[in-house]
Image (cartoon, rainbow, N blue to C red; front, side, top):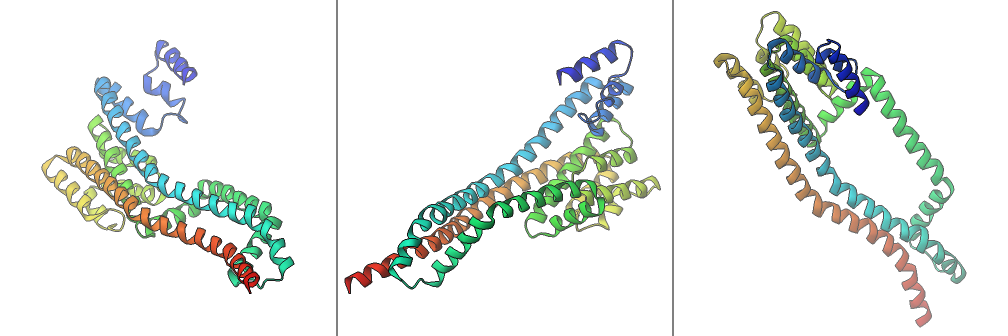
Amino acid sequence: MAYILEGVIWNVQNGQFLFMSLKKFANHFDDLFINVIKIGEETGNLADNLVYLSTELKKKQQLRQRLRSAMIYPAVILVATLGVSGILVFLVLPRLIPVFSSLGVKLPWTTRFLIATAGFLFNYGVLLVGGLIGFGILSFFLTRKVSPLRFFVHRLILATPFLGSLSVMANVADFTRTLGLLLRSGTKIVESILITADSMPNAVYQKALRGAAEIVRTGEPLNIYLARHENIFPPIATRMIEVGNITGTLEANLFYLADFYETEIDESTKNLTTILEPLLLLVMGGIVGFVAISIITPIYEITQSFRR
C-alpha cells in the first residue's frame, strides 16, 4: 500500500486527477471506489464523497464480518468432532485390534465397520485428502474462470434452504448500499446500476442488474424490472424503491433498505447459532458415542467371557 500511495502521490503532483491515479491500481481499488472519487473531483464534493465512501465501506465490511462470525461456531464443533473421533480411531483402536484378534472375540458390526473405515483411511488417506484438496482447488479456479459454472454455483446457493435466504439478504443489502452511495455521490442512475452490478459478488445479481441497467436506459423505472425477479429481489425492496422513485427519496430509501437487511442478517445469524448449537452438539455426541461404543462393546464382551 505504501508503494501504491507513493505512485498516486507522484501522479497527482504531476497534474493527474486522483481517480486517474487510482485507476492504474485497479486490482486494489474497485470501480465503486474510483467512480465515487471521480464524481467528487468533477463536482467539487470530493471531501464529502470520501466520507460517504469510508462510512459505507465500513458498513459493508461489518456485514461480511458478521457472516463470517456466524460460521465460526459450526467450524469449531466440526474440528472438535473430527479431532476426538480421529484420536479414538487412529490411536486407541489400532492398539486394541490385536487383543480382539488374539482372544477370538466376535466383533459387533459397528466395530467391524470402524475397523474397515480405519483401514481404508490408513491405506488411502493421503490419496483421499490429496484428491479432496485438488478437487477444491480445481473447483475454486473453475468457478472463478468459467462464467457458466460460476453462475450455476451462485444460483445453487440462492436455491439452498436458509443459506439461500441469507444470501439474498446479503446481496440485496450490498446492492442497495452501493447503489445509494453512487447516487448520493452524483453518478447517473444507469451508470450507477452498471457499477453496482460489477461490484456484486454473486453472478446471478450481476446478470440481473446489467439487465436492469438496459431497461432503465429505455426509460422504464427500476422497480418494474426488479418486480419481475421477485425470487432475488424481495417485494419490500421493490416497493421501497418504487416509493423512492415517486417521492424523490430514492437515495434515502436505498440506505434504509441496506440497514434493514443488515439487521435481518444479524438476527438470522444469531438464530442460526442458537439452532445449530444443540444440533451440532447432538451430532458430535452421536459420532463420538458411536466410535466409543464400537470400541467399548468388544471389551465388555471379553470381560463377560472371563467371568464365565
